[in-house]
Image (cartoon, rainbow, N blue to C red; front, side, top):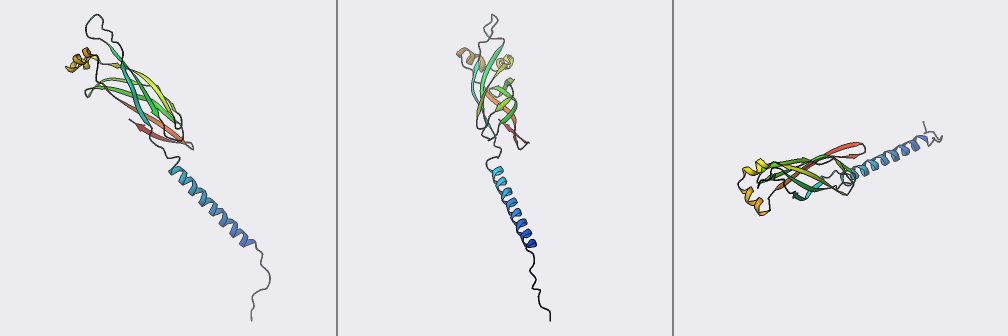
Length: 170
């Protein structure tokens, strides 16, 4: 009859199994925490851009009643809701007069800090011939109020752990 051995077995295989199990559990917990962080805190959100003001400068009339050259100055701001800085490249600002493109400008590139807002200014050269093609322009110009609509297009990047995430806003 064979009886089981009464020799004591070393606890080595069991302690190795427990150590590996604890290591695996710690890795699973770390992956879960990092996944939760990337889906909540580090999620890349689109920044918002706002045109705060648009002022048409005094035109140079050159002795005539209507101007020959018009410039407008825009004051815009970029608000970054991300936890990391947003690096944006050359925002493009356009001006429309009754749905017709009359001016365009590029603002300088920059960095919007984390949870911060940065302001920028750009000068638009307005195309006077396109403005004069619209019969409403002369009346509005004589009244001192010109109805211009502006849009801004900005592309930027947010880097998280050396990985760049691109974003575009209007």
